[in-house]
Image (cartoon, one colour):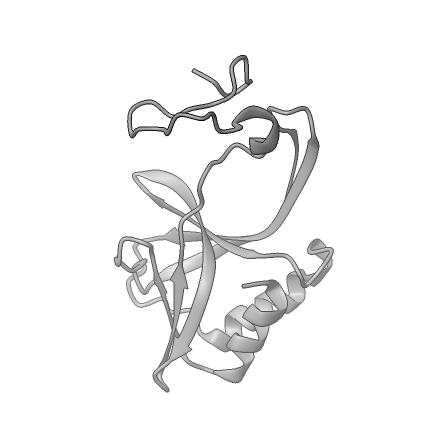
Length: 158
C-alpha cells in the first residue's frame, strides 16, 4: 500500500481506532505512538554489479506506559499531512517499524474497518538475489532442498 492509498484509507474511516496486526497475527498494543514518519532511501549494488535504489515511507511505532493513549485514524492522517514535505512522493510504499525484541519493518498490505476500528495488516519483507539471471542460472540437474543448483562460479554459489 502506498502513501496515497494509506491516506485515503485513513480519511475514509475518520475518528476510528487503529489496530496494527503483525504477520504472526499479534497486534501492536493499542496504546502505541507513531514517533517518526520518515522517507527511507537505500542506494545499493546487487551481487551482479547493478546499482539499485529502494524508497519507502516508514512509520515508527513506540509503546510506552501510557495505557490510555490512543491514536485515531484522523490524527494519523493529520500527522501524515504535516510530514508531507518529508516524503518526496505519495507513491512510496508504507512500512511500519516496530520493536518487539528486535526492530523490524513490515509493509502495510491491507486495511479494513468494522465501523469502529481500522485494522491495518502487515506483511513480511524478504531477502533475495536480485541478479538471478547472472548468478543463479539453473543447470540440467534439479535442485534439492539442501543443494540448490547454480551456475558454476556464480557470485551467489556456495
